[in-house]
Image (cartoon, rainbow over all chains, first blue to last red; front, top):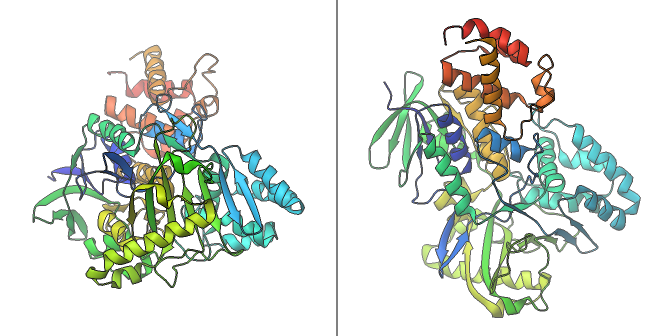
Length: 458
Length: 83
């Protein structure tokens, strides 16, 4: 008999959610995390006595408690967590800024409609019918890839507005370059423009603690510093996993949340790894800034999505970083958060993994410094000066992401090809997380939940 | 278990699944799904709870038997008679 009924590889949000779901109904579950801290892409670390989050700008899919069909509340019910007891802070408001127009939006979808009416009065009727099409679309039905850009140009016929709407939706979840699958577009449109941004009370650490307490409360086990080296198979079935130190753990079923390229490698799956490698990765620069920089700084938004051109070039850039568009996030700008003496500014720009990877180890540090400086100067052109008041700063390159999260090429949104049914050629090996197809924190967690429901509980 | 006890078990399970569930105007013969705004994931939870508590295996093609409170009781009565 196997030691565990289920082994989950990866202590990120999809793995933890899957673990809670399985353990809740008595499945003997072991969660393996390679690091000493859980969270995967959405983790944390300490610097200067301050906790810094690695991934979280905001959670998408805001829903007030009581709205039962909303993904966030479905998720909480599935994990048997109290939504009422979960404190949330909604965004103050965000902005999409292009050279010739800007659009603000909040968690009230009507506000965006008014903004479209203000900036593009000729297009507002078509925007309303676009929203209707999106409401009627079933993004979870399995269907062939369809171009979101094609759909947008057909329904809106306003190139600038199309580019502006695509920016937040792509940068917060699109693994593909240039265009986006229609289903993914619909999911993102709903999560960002109709449900909206919020933060959990506290930091990602408290959020992770809440989830892990639930997992452990249901009898789930977690092991840290447990790097999986192989998913081992016998007679067409998965038997268990082998850890870096050689230890073997057996299981009736294995769930991998480490992404397709890594899963292919670990299992010896006969698939071209290359096809599942995402090309979109980013560099993120976190700055802790003294409160006195606030004066004269355009820092009132929660998240500012900017593009210095009128077309969005969502692709791996030819240089280390693409400074022509990006995201500036102010994680302190959520409703009900107290103003601190210092505040954070987070910059996100598309990065070229291959160039970062090719840099000699001796050069890497200097390059990181050089591009951090460039990213900050670039952000200053958008929001005003703050670099003189930076108390602490740190940057994550695609290599940092790859090293800590095991996401191949630092592609935070994973593979452009998704495994929507979560299945593999082995009857007892399953895929969940970013590469199963859902997006964002709530999406990744629902991925873990649905894969367990379909393949382990049913 | 009596019919009344089975009914209480079902309501208790639903209450456990959904902190917002309200039973004040519940019509025992009408679909639970519409009245309580539950989805198929919630129904899976009812099935899983029954399995956990009474080692009851309900095959997927019999899930429709759980549609209303009355149909739940009718379906579960013979299965839980010794429970």
